[in-house]
Figure 1 (spheres, helix red, strand yellow):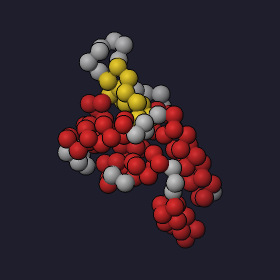
Figure 2 (cartoon, rainbow, N blue to C red):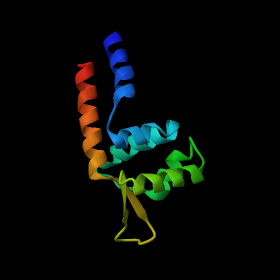
Figure 3 (cartoon, helix red, strand yellow):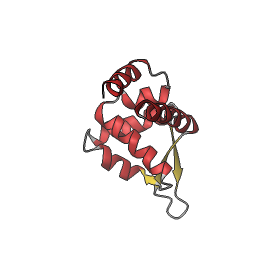
Figure 4 (cartoon, rainbow, N blue to C red):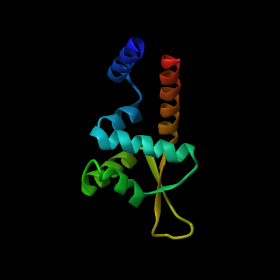
Length: 114
C-alpha cells in the first residue's frame, strides 16, 4: 500500500498531461466529470450536455459546470456533437488528446498497482 500511496502523491505533483491537469484542477466536479466523460467514451455511450451538467451540479452550480465545459472546449479537451436525431441534443466527447493522455495515464497507473 505504501508503494501505491507514494505513486499517487508523486503522480499528482508531476503529471504533465495538460488535459488531465485541467480536469483535476477543478475540484471534485472536474475530476468526476473527467471520469464520467471517459467512462461514457470507453463504454461507447453518448452523454448529453444536459446529463453532464446534471452530474456536475451535484458538486458545483450549473453555471460553474457550463463555464467549465466552455473552457474545456476552448482548450480542445472536449468536443461537442449535435445529435442527428434531435438537433436540440448536444453530446460531449473527449478530444483525441484527452483520450490519448487519459489512456497513457491509466496504463501508468495500472502498472503502479500491479
